[in-house]
Amino acid sequence: MQSITIRRPDDWHLHLRDGAMLEGVIADTSRTFARAIIMPNLVPPVVTTADATAYRERVLRALPAGHRFQPLMTLYLTEHTSPDDVEAGAKSGLITAVKLYPAGATTNSHGGVRDMEKAMPVLERMAAIGLPLCVHGEVTTPDVDIFDREAVFIDTVLDPLRKRLPELKVTMEHVTTSDGIDYIKAAKSNLAGSITTHHLIINRNAILVGGIRPHYYCLPVAKRENHRLALRAAAVSGDPRFFLGTDSAPHVDPLKECACGCAGIYTSINTMSCLAHVFEQEGALENLEAFASLNGPAWYGLQPNEERITLSKQAEPVVFPARIETGAGPVTVFDPMFPLHWQVVG
Ligand SMILES: NC(=O)N[C@@H](CC(=O)O)C(=O)O
Ligand SMILES: [Zn+2]
Ligand SMILES: [Zn+2]
Image (tube, rainbow, N blue to C red; front, side, top):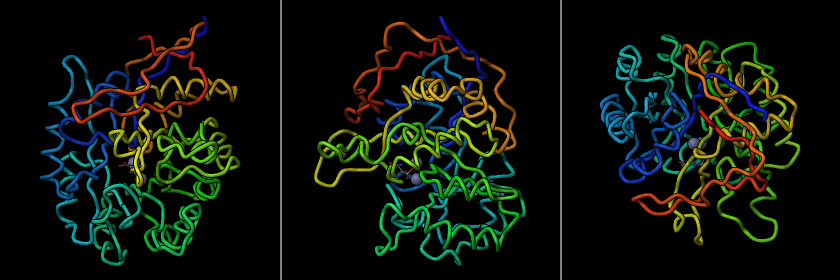
């Protein structure tokens, strides 16, 4: 039997939600991952260090007994965010990053930034103290095609921002295009990218061919096959600028299976099995550890985890539930559309 042992992985982009949903999903992450960057797009969003302190407590309370898991908190950047509050949160060790959602770009982002100028005082402070900015890299102007929103964001928002504030550390989250990959590779410093599990596996056909499939709809929306291939090449390359951020984003099924379904794919439960499959297919299992366990901590200035996990390849497919039941309702699990043989065994 084939097996691989790697340092315990971390998830550098995760939605845990709150209340009954938080309680229903957290174990799928904390069973396997040591740490995760917790997204702040709650309703209402996590905007102050006081909000983040309270949310962190709720996350820790929801952890199953015996699970050791460290939530790394983020603040949702608004046009009114206080630079002093951000600095205090960073200095106390509570805040790992600040998150930029262009207003209206994605789930619960209407309170996001409309005018980047208004965010400059916070961004300048972050650059001064070395606190990373995580960005949902899509423009929201209605005249830009949804499949072009990442590339246009790079040209019109991200590149001007990085030229203006070269000392600011930026994580381009859930990169979905070859444009994003090329832009990150071309940067000399202070830019890295997280890549989701699902964008390594699906292209836009998964959403649209043979019927409309809401459980493959997320933002940024999956792109053409050539983009998926660029993401895979970057992820398996071992390049330290690319690391795992699952963007596992649970929504209850009724909110996805309707006339205007929510964006988000739930992968926490089978992410490592999917990734081992992808890395094996690419002949790069030896770089799975870099992608899932080493590159992320190095970028965020943290030590990699000392604990190890082992994945082993089973003769029979490993069965994951089609959906999980939470107190908030059922959540469909990402179906990679191929059998999974890799299993986290310890
Ligand atoms: N990725 C998604 O499709 N959805 C995320 C928001 C986000 O990360 O953009 C969510 O919160 O549901
Ligand atoms: Zn996003
Ligand atoms: Zn997300």
